[in-house]
Image (tube, rainbow, N blue to C red; front, side):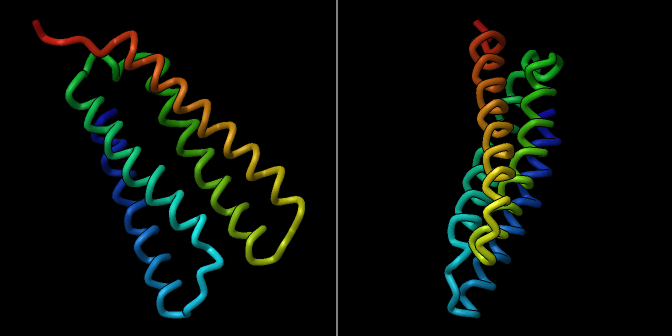
Length: 124
């Protein structure tokens, strides 16, 4: 699970950096919120979760870890695509999908927190 999170985090990192470069080149910062969320949630948070899962293998083989991975990786793209549509085109229906994706991401963080609190222990 740790390696999965680390690998997907670099995909989000590349997307976030490319989006940042695009915004810089076009001098259009309309997608700043998308750029920031992709880098913070997709790159930083997923990489850190991957490190936690790699260091504490006991936390990787349970339902919390699976729910964390899948709800985060379904929720974040839904939320970011919908946010981009809303910011660029003002499509009000996108707000529903921003909320759905956001709830999935929050759920994934709660699953991660429960998992860490229950399964991460010192070696001693």
